[in-house]
Image 1: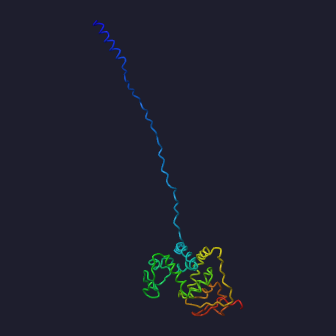
Image 2: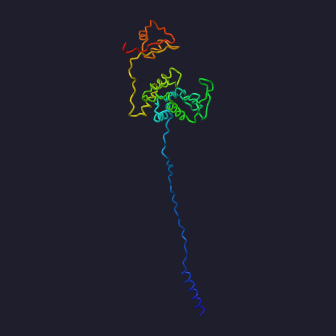
Image 3: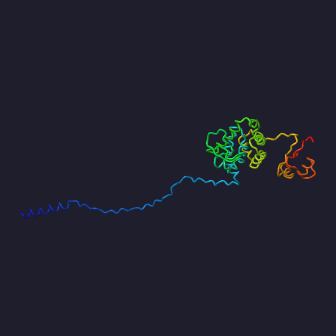
Amino acid sequence: MKRLLLICCLMTMVFSCRSKKTIVTKKTKTNTEQVETKVEPKKTDDVVAVKPPKIYANNTERYIDTYKEIAQNEMRLYNIPASITLAQGILESGSGKGTLSVKANNHFGIKCHGWTGKKIYHDDDKKQECFRKYKDAKYSFRDHSLFLSERKRYSKLFKLKKENYKGWAKGLKAAGYATDRKYPQKLISLIERYNLHEFDKEVLGDSYTEYKEPITNEVVTYTVVKGDTLYSISRKYNISVKELQNINGLNDNTISIGQAIIVKPSSNN
């Protein structure tokens, strides 16, 4: 009986061991994939081409390029030819390099005359005269426009055609703007040398018509000043020395200060 009981116990143990599930742990190898990522350079905005700085032949060309638009705007507002404004600015400011223009942004030598703004003192006709001082040169251009348009003595200028820069140049001198007797010729020379009348043309557009001085039969004379020669006068008026001698009844090249020389005879002669 004991033997039978022992056999049963042994069989029970064997059966129970076989029925237990063994847990098998499998070690799995994980393949690590190396992913190569290409780093692309960051996209930047389109590169803006940098314009090379402008090169000017001289200070006058630089001045014209700097202030031409201001002069044209003044022409639209006040009917003063841009060519005249620019020529006056060039002449009176030394192409922007003069003392008043550098220290006071005063390009037209306008004196105080009741001015309540900032001032600068500078030797002119007299010592330490009072001149207007501006924060920006554009205000000097505006004051120039107001100076001409608001004074009665310049009113005749505004009856001239805006294409007639020669008439404006001569009219300024006649109205007492400058004491230099060669002031008109200097303005005209600057306008024609640098083609400043082209800025008038841009403003006027299709209404622009080239101005031609009326033909007159009047005798044109020139008064001799110190330093003049018959040759220099002939060059100035595009006439030969021989013609000048014949017109004026001269036997040689001798002329004297104050002498009136006929440089253009009447066409009726």
